[in-house]
Length: 87
Image (cartoon, rainbow, N blue to C red):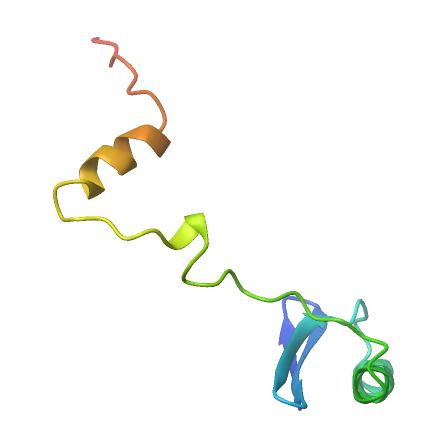
C-alpha cells in the first residue's frame, strides 16, 4: 500500500491476496488519492477489481533464443536504417 506521485498525478501500488495492483488514481490532490486508494483496496478485497497479469514465460513474448538468433530478432523489430544526408 503505497502512494507515489509521478509528475503531478498520484498512483497507488498494493497487493491483495497475492495479486499486485498498480494504477493511476487520476488526481493531483493527496487526500483524494488516499480515499481513492482505500476504495480500490476494498474493491480488490471483494474481488470486484481485476488485475492485468504479466505475460507468462511460455508466451510468445518470452520465447527462448540462442545468442546467434538475438541479432536477427532485433533487426526484425528495428526501424529501417535511413541514409544519412551529406552536407
